[in-house]
Image (cartoon, rainbow, N blue to C red):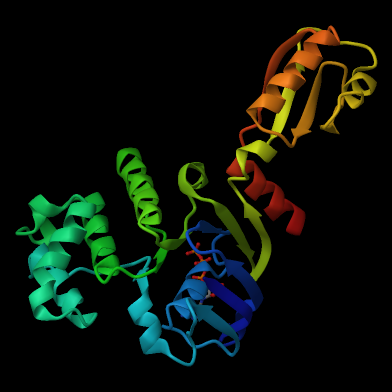
Length: 304
Ligand SMILES: Nc1ncnc2c1ncn2[C@@H]1O[C@H](COP(=O)(O)OP(=O)(O)OP(=O)(O)O)[C@@H](O)[C@H]1O
């Protein structure tokens, strides 16, 4: 759905993006993460055809972004990190204005406003001015503006900044809802704990370079399983290696191990049964939940 190839962007005296390449699959929600100044905003602005890179290529849903910036605006929704809303208009007027600017014909605007405001849960705020709304609601209005034309791709720069935990949770639900409607999302954020709730992939940018692209939500069948024993057992590794269809990823001591299972729930059951038959004092056998924050910190440390 999105491909970025060898992108280079320079501010005077500073290379902000240095040979950035990656692909994003349709229907995914990708977290764009990285330290302050890594180049996240610059990358999103280039992808939204707002900044012109020195070289490279960006293709979104078959559109060459650098060659056809106006076509790109039609197929993407973009939320800037510092967005503004017209305080003298009502929310309905803001949405109407953006809808018309996106080429929605006047007769279709009321239906588009109705649909997007229902999706963002702001339908009872349409007659308010944005100035009267909380930060969380203003964020929702800004996202409604970004997606009113139902773009297949949505780029969001720090959408959760300044929101309280409840509003951030609602935002995560909204992203999953947009994904379920078939949209592909790229979301930059510093709040890693919550990204894990909705992201399928993580793209790590550091000093203008992509240092890692990982699938956050690996298919659960391929998740490593943690095995914990009630007490240490001699030759644990050898015993585990005797199990069919099980790969031992890690067994540092006599009491725990990380196993890779390739089968379904029935195989998990068989493996658990085999562990008991081996007379291992199993007290825990469960998939390991991935921790985005750990992955991110490991990546950043590794690349520095
Ligand atoms: N208009 C500009 N002129 C010159 N340098 C800039 C400009 N905007 C950004 N930069 C520099 O480019 C680099 C990348 O900035 P960018 O805002 O893209 O990073 P970021 O990852 O979004 O950072 P943050 O997480 O702090 O928002 C930084 O070193 C920044 O200082």
